[in-house]
Length: 156
Image (cartoon, rainbow, N blue to C red; front, top):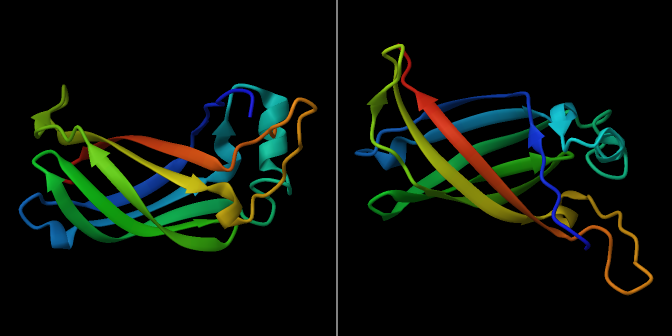
C-alpha cells in the first residue's frame, strides 16, 4: 500500500428507528448505490466499479441491516448488522460515537448526529485483486476503514 484513498458514495437511502431509552428497538436499513462511488479520480472510480472490485454491473447495491444495538458509554453504541457487498453478507459492528443531543435545525426539524466506523476486510466480500510492488508490499490493502457521518431527522 502506498497511501490511503478516500472516497464516498453519493447516492444512498435508509431508514433508522432509534430511541435511546429503548435500544432493543433500534433498526437500521440502508441501501447504497455502488455506482455513485466518488474518489475524485475518474479512472480509479471506473476501475473500482468494474468486475475486479465492486462489479457494479452485477451487484449495483450494497446493503446494511442492523441486528442488535448495545450501549458502551453514555454517548456511544455498538450496532451489529449484516453488510452485503457483491452479494456476499457478513456481520460487522459499527462503533457509534459523538452522538449529539436532539436539536431543532433551522427549519424546525428535530435531528441528532453521530459518527460511526468499522473496519472490514475487502477479501471477505470477494474483492481480492492486488498487485505486488517491486519494492515489496501491495498496491491495495485488504483492510478498509468505513466511516459514516450521520444526521437523523425525526419523521413527522
